[in-house]
Image 1 (cartoon, rainbow, N blue to C red):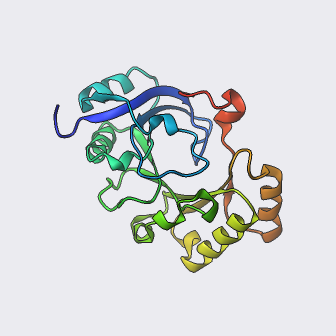
Image 2: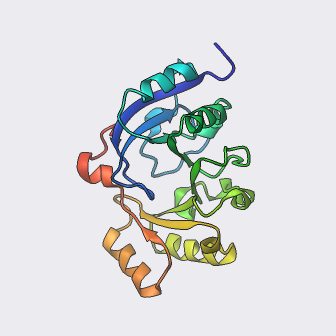
Image 3: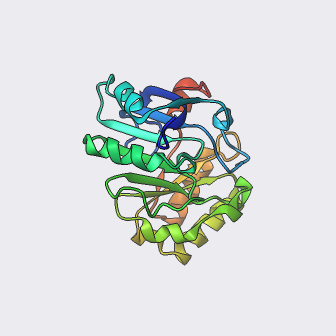
Length: 215
């Protein structure tokens, strides 16, 4: 096993269900392992198990699909040291690469060509204390910050964090309702009433395929 081998839960081809490239056919590389335990997590199967893979074999599998869009996700992909090299090699091959990260691990070494989609964990996530606010200085205009909102208290907290850290001046902001906990229409109406400069998003893949893994 090489030092930059990665433990992979799955590699699959689907429509991007979230973020700026929603709806675009995308290859997802899901890394195993996560130090967080968000109460709404829908990928707990990726906490353990998986298969050790070389970077070359991962990139060879990605090349089988007719898309330039790649999402590296988890779990928490940055929990594995080799993730940084995977991101670099994908960018070297001119893929459009996004990284989905919890925001609990340092992002300063992520290749600048990568689009970072970084959570700020709300109080109802049960992992608010894991937010690494120092990461905000490493975000730029092509990155995104995501708030998964479970209730009215989360919404108020997210608005306050936006103002406190002047987040709309850093990058695009995503407000996403937690499925089964926050009514999407209600969240949309709050955003409109407050005239927030955010992107409302729902998880497209769950409307199409439910909670089926690998979709």
